[in-house]
Image (cartoon, rainbow, N blue to C red; front, side):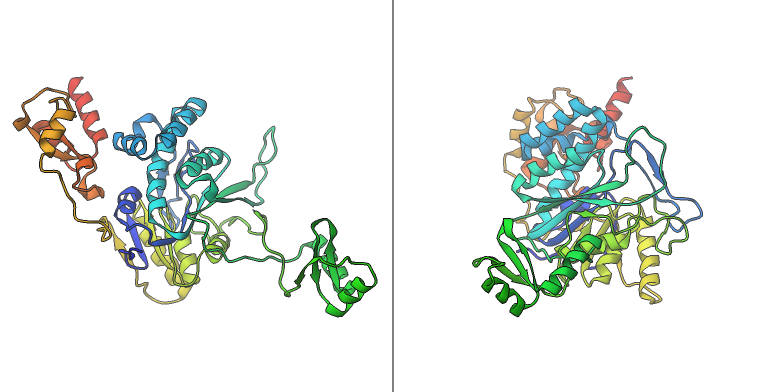
Length: 430
């Protein structure tokens, strides 16, 4: 299995797709992501808060769809692209653009997860059903584990519908052997009454499922002798702990107002207790936790508290500032010894880049002698080789990532993507 090629306690501040492309395959144990939800809003932290400067748009149009993303998705699995286009027809262009953005990143997340790894995608009912279809296609429907509901209280709103007070956690495993540590809760009022009655009786029997939990061995065996309990029941012994948690969680509160010490006023901040539960369940001490949309770095803080290694990625420099502030506040130390990077990690799990000796001739034939950018026909010697996905963004020097551009298009594109070149060409035509 490839080794992790990123240091523990690293925050990357740049496009997460670039960083994900640079992480070795199958070296991450757990991914938690709280991405944009296609809410149609712009989120911004208050200017007088710890998270001042944190801002992101959750508004999507077809202009946000990069040509290289579409090409990658269609090449990886046409069925995945079919789901995205179908969602676009049903919900509109904004959903198609959003799912395209998410898909290229989820494909990379699937690649970097270990066979024992898991992914939790935090979303809301706006996009949960579309994202589940996408994840089913990428991970395989057999890899779906749970749709966990996180229910919470909040200020009521005026609406002619039920109050919308829950988020969704889509839980997928890389394989059947995923790490999972059962998390247990406290007895609620109803189960507590059942528990206390069973303690007095010595057992709790479920006849329809042919199961019995034994609290007092002597009392239980006597009940069998007396014919109160049939022989052959599946027996288990009470272990003194609460019941396993179910797939709806209503015991973790939202952060509430400014009096909450945990709050840093990041627009979409989630409670530490929520992320700690996920990390405790689906990883072990020393495992690697990745949050590719880390924002105010709650998952990084939770991973540190639970003795996991961690990597966070966010487009904003505020993430690095916040993780420093929060680590110092949490640990009480005067300086946090983490790493801040703005580059792309270099993969160490791949063979050296290799290009076919006749690649220029092959590209010239496949492009029918035209520049991919402006479309002008040219002699082969006047066309230059270009990386579709720039190497500075994780692209490789391989046949599938090369194209031919004329000199003007190549220099105009530079180390940017093809969308930038298309925009410049339209401006030139106008």
